[in-house]
Image (tube, rainbow, N blue to C red; front, side, top):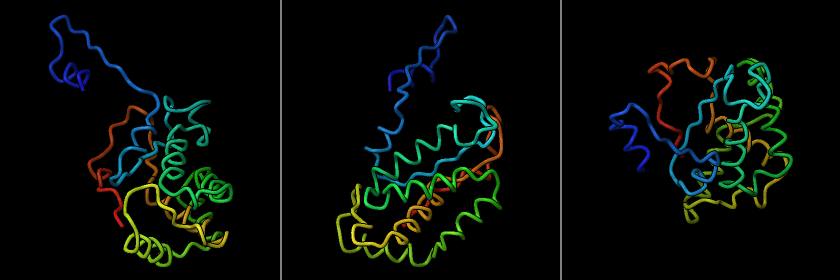
Length: 171
């Protein structure tokens, strides 16, 4: 918080002191509220190889860590594989194709999550998916990924337009 105050006030000599914890996922693990991640698909900074490799975008790891903490029973190896296939899509058409190939039923997913939420404690992590079929867990994993992250086709420094600032999905 102190570094934020320094940024807000500035310093007389024009320098700023900012300390950033690179383990952003640890913040999300403690945060129980709604989250919406916006992945810049051509980001040249938040990548491990280059902007042409969408799978090297660090936003992917953030999404996976968040979902693995919040929904550990859904995020089995198969759930992670399904999400990685969705994350590898390079455009909306490919995303939709991956989503439909797993035959994700949005209404069923909402129903499962709503039922879980009403019957149990609402704090994360949730054990939803524990007694679910493999197909059900994969569907739920993809549904959650799509609710927690969306793509914005731009480079790192392109300002997000006002239209991209939407409230995160709430169950």
